[in-house]
Length: 317
Image (cartoon, rainbow, N blue to C red; front, side, top):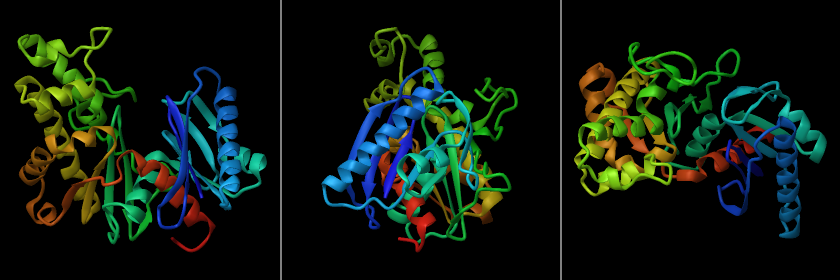
């Protein structure tokens, strides 16, 4: 299967067999500007992947697409994506016409959830929830061994559950969403705030060319034991823990998986997240729920998009 991960800064494709082995991967920058340019780049990427697979002796059977945003799965329609600047795009029909291959489209967090289910830390689990921690927070729900998409296909927007109605403004236009309080963006914002109070922090020497911090610099300072950076992680961990305690109360999962870019520094989060869940959750509900880091890292979306295609074309891999 050709698994494709569509992002605002890059598009990636991998040829993946049923056991989750990648024959190869390709990555290209996402064009800025028009929706037409985005679609054209996507089509050319998939055509290139299809040709490369054939050249290497593989037969591409189908295409799986994962994109950030609101997706109507059954219709193959990308309704809206804040990170990709397109809306109401019938991606499935476009790719099917261009390559004459069965094509399947889902939210990128749902794809990452499938990746963990088939090939990652959630293998063998039937009921679990994935949170992708990056610039924002995405979510995927696996119920009874299947992705739960809801009545319109948009279930799992865990990042937009409000954990502090007086909190900062979220990109969705509301205040105090989990995304605004527990994402990579929130981590940097909290570190900047604390740095104004503690200018002696290592963070002062870790600003980028424009004088700004980023998630990598905050993580690096925390790894070096900087108290300001560690305090920023403490704050983000607390809100994540509150959000996860609510998720456990709602869905009774056996497992909660933390994935995405911020999870690369997950060891700085995990103990505090688990402690906050234990403190704020209903004890009888949270005591047996495991909270673990993704084992797939940046490959979760690509592997999951391929798994989406395997699932859509017949027997589960």
